[in-house]
Image (cartoon, rainbow, N blue to C red; front, side, top):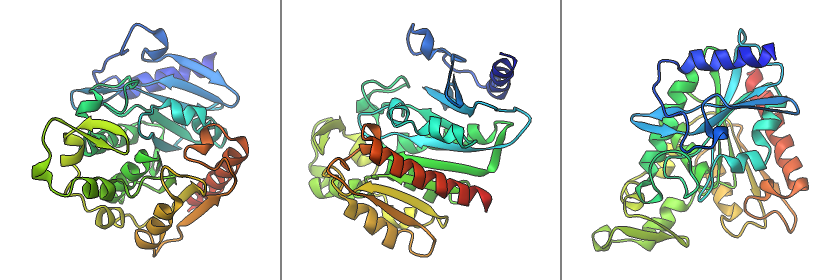
Length: 304
């Protein structure tokens, strides 16, 4: 109990200067400081800010967390129509806590209809997501127990390309990056669907079967994905299932060879009929392969 209370005190002290909402609704499990424990981990609801916007998230700590020590911290970015819970279903913050790392899982502002953070899906854009990541990065690095030289970023699906873009924009701030079936071709696909921006009428667009606000397209129309992502010179781990029909593994192979050719980056391909999109959420054998690859990667990069 003393250890948990000390952990909560450390969290409160870290963010006490930041005014933020304590819950998006009346559910106490979404309230600031709500704590849960499990096998080798403790999670604490920790709201963060992006300007005036409130970002819901949770910090996952190792069970033996010591607030006087410095820890590597991982920022985990979810994909389309998802929330922080997708990483939790895949056990990612729990696995990393058992390895001695802290993780922050969060909901992008407007990231889905189930997001607990501010904004609606119609207000979501590539730039709002980039601002969320930048704001979280700044606040994570301000945590007294964060090893600022060992901040990592993970991204699933659309969160993968957002993580890669963020690393390219902040190449000196991330010690490493893990991309899970990243939607690296998302921007190119959208531009191909809407080659004449001036011809886009109305307030919404449809991309890959999902309806978004027009700003979702206009904000990224001039993005130089390859040029920005390739600014990150660290080692990247990409994990992709070969049966993925939502985001083909060829996108990850292209990213590995074109964006990160001069590093020791690697692509782990997961085989099997169930190696589909988001396989790590429900398929135990694939989970284990992905976890082991990430654990080995983290051990190597943290030791550098």
